[in-house]
Length: 238
Image (cartoon, rainbow, N blue to C red; front, top):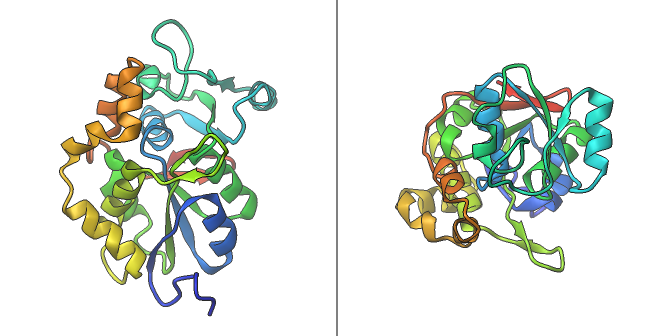
């Protein structure tokens, strides 16, 4: 046993991509939680019968990757209007069934992409599919829930309240044998008023930029009954 693996517990929690890389050999599945906005985008797209391909880099490589798949690459920037998709959940509201979309993101998408490289059974979870996600992976014996967080300007992890609480909401739905880290997140969720998250840093940033409607979609609890599983490089309904 290594002290940081949270061995002996069914449900575990640890932050960011380094947790995945350190713990992937000790788990049966991972739940990637990037509530504002990657995981919400995945949930919305999967509901519409689309396929979301995670991609770690927000640069022209996304276009090349999309072309290799016969897919569309999402814009690297959020859009207020006009054609195209992006990390704005509202931009996916009319995504056609059967669409293939490469969605670059340095947080949730990067972690999901790395999980695929490592061969980890992976789910994308958020507030809107918290119960569905818990139901989809409930039979796994060792579940690592990964709140993704944001990045500081130097590239280091900035823990994000919305990801921690969304992770806690999934853990609370899972129940069972939780590590102290996982139990703390579940307890935080159970004491949370979801309305307070409209004032968290990530939500305030988006609202100030004109994307308040995105925030509302990201904070809609149990709006979807579909788990989102990463399979052959893309997310589909699990």
